[in-house]
Amino acid sequence: MRIKHSGLYKIEVLQRAGTSNMKFTVTVYESPSAVDAGVTDMKLMSVKEGGPVILQTDVPQLTGDELIVWRFGDKGKLIAKHDIEAKSPPLYDDTDERLRDRFKLNHQTGSLTITNTRTTDSGHYKVKISSNKQTIYQKYIVTVSEPGLSPAPVAGIVVAGIVVVVLLVAAAATGVIYHQRKIAEVPETVSGEEGDDVELNTGVTKIQTSDLIEWKGNKDNLIAQIKEGTVDITSYEDVFHGVFRDRLKLDMKTGSLTITNPRIEHTGPYKLLINNKCKKRFIVYIRVKTLTVKENGSVTLETKTEIQTGDEIRWMFGNKDTS
Image 1 (cartoon, rainbow, N blue to C red):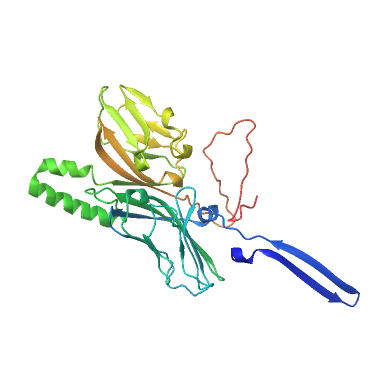
Image 2 (cartoon, rainbow, N blue to C red):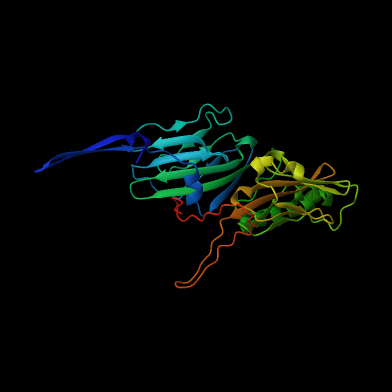
């Protein structure tokens, strides 16, 4: 169904006893949250600023009746839409100066290409491809690195091997000092499942009382710091709409940061600064937690949350959030 199918429907039934009529009002709407409900995994993409990035879908070939909807950001902003069945040209968001004239949809696969990328293009991208046979949901985390910095690794082992080669060649050519500086520019990938604590290790044995330790998230927003031997997290709990609230812990000895009970929205770039100098970069990837059980067995879905008197708890099942 499309939004254009919304409207008033009538049925007239002719019988020997007489004629009966019924009316139905149908409203079709798009729900950005439906993408999150249908996604079981996401892809990490990275690129240097100015370069292109292609968000590939898992569709080998569109059949001709699909509706493709691309959204960007935590609020699910509509950025591209294509109704192939209507044979109309793709619609792009031309109100956002950051995105104007830089998007292109592939008519065969539904993939999205972003050209002349900027650091503001970093973030969550979602796509929903609907057809008469199925609906496909996919999600992406795009990281656009500043000029001169190495882009984040997309596939751990392969990229890690390339990084090692680059560092060894650099050290041989220009010395150990240059080698140490490049380590801070190459992001370290840390992955985990929803609900399982994730630690971003500073690699420091012991910090000094006079050290200023700063942890920053996407767009260089400060999320936690140790200043003059005092931990400060509460001041930054409302950053990114409060997604870090009651979830961050700092190690006073090493300065390492732990994200407790993480969710998918904690996926993204992180930066460690010591005394205003960037010491380490991280790309955190939080996967949807998957539980398996044999038929006739039992499974417990743990919340890891302490409920309070007066709380209302609801368990939902399926993409339609059935209670």
